[in-house]
Image 1 (spheres, rainbow, N blue to C red):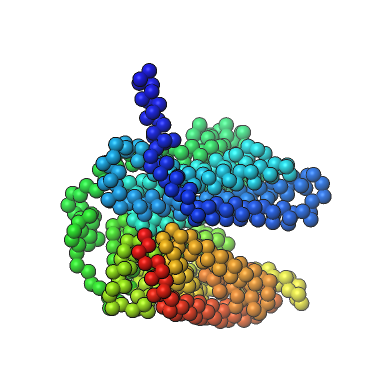
Image 2: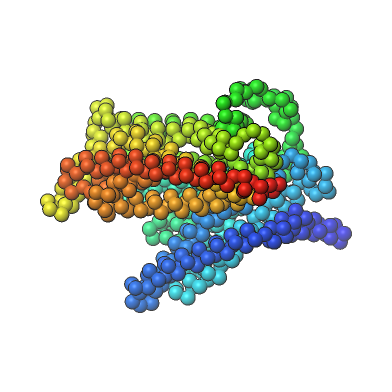
Length: 621
């Protein structure tokens, strides 16, 4: 019996009574920020569900229509909830890296009687508790959809399981990074970049595989069980995204039968298995963190010293040391260098490879357009999130670690400091920006030289219904060549706007997490509204549509890749395409000017209020 008692006590202290887990839950539950996040999360879901139900109310004629409306509303809310979980989980888990990546914190934890599994699991579930609480608070809302019919209870529970598995996997990655000290305070950047790029790439490849199916739009692919949104689609839309039938499954092996026949179960078990594996590895390596063994060859190759060394190679500082620190010093660690230049190398090879495959007729016109648009949107989203994270933590991070207090004692002026932040961040992002815009520019130059003799040419004939001439066929290039100079202008201006918004919130916020969340909300809201309006204006408003389509990089990229479809309202004859292209260029210049004026105005306002704000938040940690 003593053995059983000791085992039960150990299991209880491993998770339910884990001191670290209890401390994190108790301290976090008292914070108003968590209450506001939960309230806003639930409020957004309620508004979305009510809006969808009210929109479908006019078409409801019988109980069948009511069930269909309830099922449709549930599907949209389920997708939206999964997206919010993927966005909010990195925010809650960022504290694991931001706080526990400090060697002093680990030194204290390792001197306590806590075992390594207790430390790892306590940090994981203590922070993951708030994400699971978000899921739990929305369960009654999903239960209401049962009254409309058309929504099986199993689908509700399985959708929650998919979201919980995604949150668990992201949390385990955060703890693994913290234990092995592979990331610093910019945890939100690492998570958001990884989440967006992974989901975007796998989703785009899945769409391409389905579109290229010989039998028409296909169903479950090899990427379905490794993408939570695809797994949720297979669960909620079995008719439009079907699994293989019984005959096809019978011809498969046991592993393939499970992979393609039960994508939701594979996703959940795969996420749980990977999370357990990372927790086990973290527990085994926890005691070895911080050990130094000289300078490895791979660190010497990048001009770095030994990890945690007191000395480092000399560096050349710019005229503005603040700008140099943001552009060079902050990113001069091995993991960050590998991540940055790995992104640049892989993006460049991918962009050049797409054009080569298209030149050799490996892609048709529409396939090339789709691949280019998916590539640009994914890479642009990653870069925007990087810009938001870096700018939103540029000042608040220095306030937390006390660096800002030291800088305020130097002769640096407010304008000099903010100009350095803005210039340094843009300089850091410049090589990253060159990848998506360079990919589009390569395609535009390729079209400008008429495809260098490509067999099928580089012109697409698109049918257009004219109000005066009936149906016309308008020839347009597969991508407008002017994308080579219009897209970089708008992209750099938009990123400068995102950076200045991040600096504004970083100056006003007490901590890095709050500034990142606020910046994501503001930039996401502004970008979504302007982008959707520009996207719709091109197809619905003549003359002015091309101007508005150029106000965000995604809508401009779409207009350059599909000019006849994106600017259809302004194209009523073959000669109208030239006028629409001129309007697109003019809109690009107007948009860039507007963003620059906004940046200058916000920076001037920040200079005026800098002293007041820093004095009010002085000493905040």
